[in-house]
Length: 99
Ligand SMILES: C[C@H](O)[C@H](O)[C@H]1CNC2=NC(N)=NC(=O)C2=N1
Figure: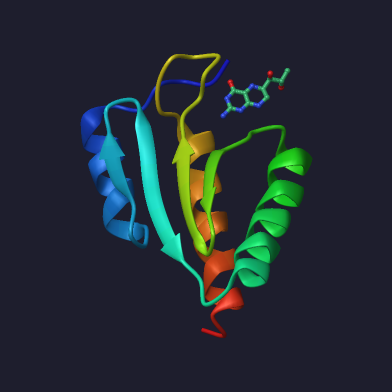
């Protein structure tokens, strides 16, 4: 079990993340890639990271647009696991965009 983050801790984490918003018990980021294969490459890389960490995002794939939703389902809210995964998704997206 991970500890649920306070509203203050979530807001602080959001200032350090790229493009994430809070939606209740979830962190949400939409990512637009230039093509379907590039979007799927991002999904595959995120899937590897998620599997290695045992913490998984909900991912909506619509052509070259992705929406990631993060929450710690076992604890019913947001934990440091979600903040860490959000940061890792940001890193994957930056690399995919050559940033
Ligand atoms: C047993 C296994 O670690 C759990 O079912 C994990 C898997 N991945 C998970 N991912 C997320 N986002 N929330 C969870 O509660 C969760 N639980």
